[in-house]
Image (tube, rainbow, N blue to C red; front, side, top):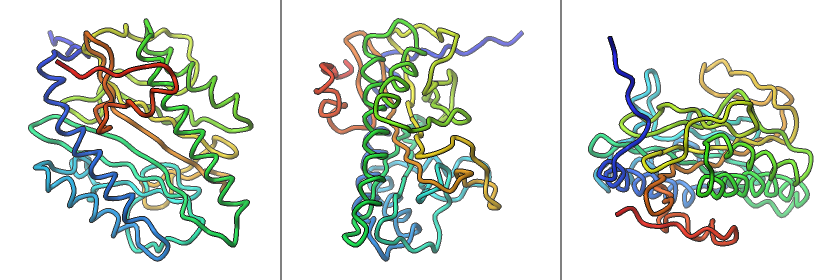
Length: 276
């Protein structure tokens, strides 16, 4: 008879997740600095990997069978899982970077989206910047709900409520967040929308990666011929934001943010507390 592994971590285990979380954050900082018109997505990948290695970690995406890069780089109508390569970024592109680090056997996972400035197409840039901002803020609303929720699936309610209030956007339903710890992807699933089930109890030891994926049009997607990249079926743009978050006895802490999420949560009245 096999025993189910608990989804809840001990305080000591959560403290061990601080370092890979910060390495993940550093990789995204390096990636953000490398994004510009004329850069390739592979150059961004190299910058992110160098940042993880400098902090003693390893890229955990490379542990996924068949994947050989540090980040996923998804551009415009690519939603997630885009493979870095020779693609040259252009002004006006919406670039989503997803990265993760493993250090001492523990994982971090986070993502952001960024629109490359293009003064010749202000309307396109504004539309894509708003999409990214809505997605980012929906993430913070989800994290803020986690801080006060009784059950995990309240997070999806908060994300959906926020996105719906911003206009005609779609939330992907085929791809959701997840638990994280010894493995990058663990139970439980973290929905970005309402579901009937309440989900597991939100209590000390719960560590999850919350990652809304929001699109300008239809939520229908397909996988490109590379067998990885997920793209929108209607060709409209998508954005992706993600953080790994720990619930502990004193509150919550965003593991993949240098300030624990203080800046993002302040407007929502939540003060993150360090893990003791």
